[in-house]
Length: 354
Image 1: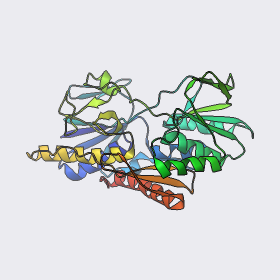
Image 2: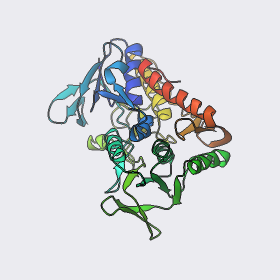
Image 3: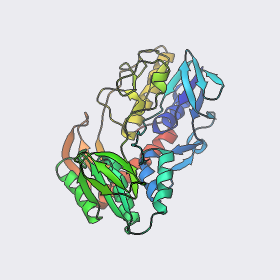
Image 4: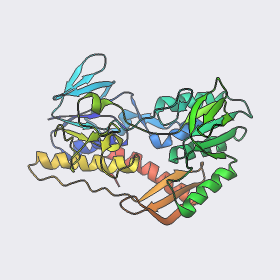
């Protein structure tokens, strides 16, 4: 039985490793556009130069898993069509292409591997006193702004978002805002409508503008168009529509996991990717064994946001991801965040989720 895994992030890598453990006789091939496993939740560190955020993909995969480096054009009736020519047949396919960024012209995205590399080079070339504007008030924006401000205190860092750190609540949000203040990050609650280093500014919906020698786009939105281009049913965001067992409603041979799967109530993140990948493999294992699969149970435990290398905040949540008041902060929060990040990578390599 041939099983293809398209995408080698947290979801795809975990799925591939779990498949060789759980599905006897499966010939597993991972198809990924690069030969590296990218720790996406560390990309803000890559931007600021405090970490590389990648390791060889082969080192993350169990023996017996084949790796095919290349872009995928579409999925078509039991065949994967590769960009530039070539096809791969499959009996089952795991779609795990993640999410992406759609930056405004004149900005550099930090939520992709290529963008983070460009941002790192541009940041390193800036002289002292230059203005860096980070666009996006969510977790990616907060983590990028604090990391850059900590690593380059000689720069003037600004964070712009319609509502900053609103993925947290109460004291957890207050702690994040206080950390931004300690690092002298200017906060502007507005929406950026235009940007460009050539103009040396960002333009705001309110009508004003701000100086900017480098504009970093820290908004992760949308998914790669593979599911839509392949004729699968997708939602308004382009995510593959799945049944309660994470199978595509268009083709039961395809299981979609992680950011590219339209699971009600799910949010982007490795906390979504790992559990979905593990469950989807278990679904396939049960089907192959002639047993009834179990529906996917959506569960969350918290939201973690780095605030530099020695600070972070972790907000605990209910299982449905609604916010609780309890949180961890400071060095304790930083240790908790690092443990979660390491666990995500370790779980992907070992083929299980915590």
